[in-house]
Image (cartoon, rainbow, N blue to C red):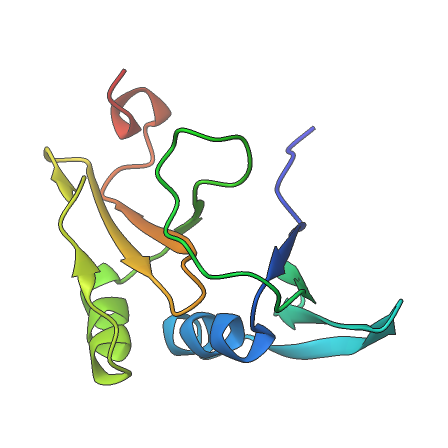
Length: 136
């Protein structure tokens, strides 16, 4: 069985900000559906294979994850053309975070933070050999 991640369900201060960065990164992503539940807005944002279930809870201030508390630190997407994705995000005003960028000959990964304080990771592999993809 080949498993894959269909979706992740996260709560964000602003759905508009989350869809702005994801839409810049993935031009094929769209709002697949949405509505309101218990007075809070939600959307499914993605393509036919994968999506982010985004719930809006605008109270509180956005803070960049610091890996010292429980919860989502970042979500990583595998992409084919990291340089093109970087350009789209730069054009939308997002800045590349300096941590954990290039990694050897088989993997490159770039991190961005959005206006919600969410961290997003984008990974490009140069091999299909899974034993060479990660450093442990």
